[in-house]
Image (cartoon, rainbow, N blue to C red):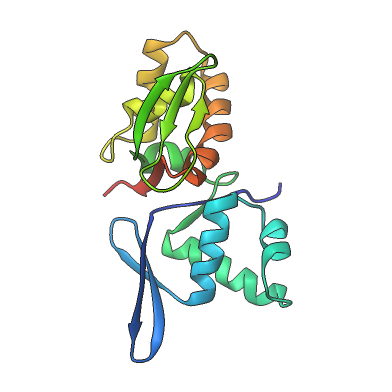
Amino acid sequence: MQSNYIAIGEDVGAISLQGKQVYRVKTNKLIELSEFAYETWETIKTNSNSFNEILQQSLLDNQGELQITVNNLLKQGVIIDLNNSFDELLSKYSIVPKGMAGKETEDGYLLIALRNHDPIDVTIIPFLIWQLAHPFVPIVDVLNAVKTKVNIDQVELYTELIEWIPLLIVSEVISLKPLI
């Protein structure tokens, strides 16, 4: 099965330390990344990619160096492989809602990021996930709350989660963070 990476945490920015740029990502703590590691994390954040897709977008010709970087990002906890860590995602991570809800639309609701993004039109399930999410509540508890509000079976709910989480991250209306 091919990997499907998603980014964890939020971009804090870059600082110059001893003449060298260091990039920081905030999960439960600040993680310092090299420029290339940060660019890889940002690529995953904006595209939610498989390793081959990341390699195609990378400026590197060296697949080995990219694989080392991806492995380091996994170890640092700033990305996870959704295909290999779904149960862990549900129990050990939370959704941090960002932005605000806009008006109701024909298909659902608009979610609006606080940065310069176009509003994202979502159906009721991702809207409820966003609305019920909290930084200190595991994703599985958010999904259980969604199930109490909408008649949906677990498989369909998980499918919606897998489909929408990357898009909501890219649209900057949520981020994911590890619990404690």
